[in-house]
Amino acid sequence: MSELAQQMGELATSLRDTAQRLRSGRLEPEAALEAIDECAQLASRVARLGAAMDERARAAVEPLPDLPGQLPLPSAQ
Image 1 (cartoon, helix red, strand yellow):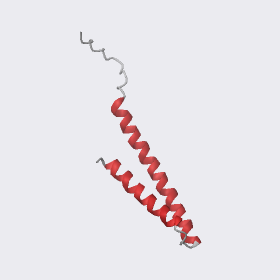
Image 2: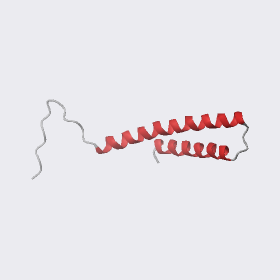
Image 3: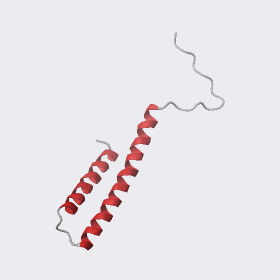
Image 4: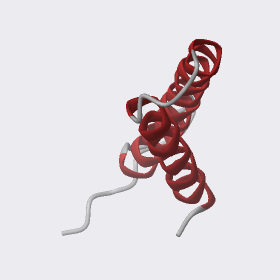
């Protein structure tokens, strides 16, 4: 598993755990606010990590741009 995928898994687990604490209804108001803030921070990190994973995936499948001064390779026939 790649490092990014591992980080994504860890963040998702943290987000699920925090959301579960919120749903339990046993948190005091201050603790609930902290948990909500933690969820927002985790979600933001997941979004940034997802964008990094998307960027790597796109780079792997998109062709390189034509660079000035390069001649095209002859096609195989």
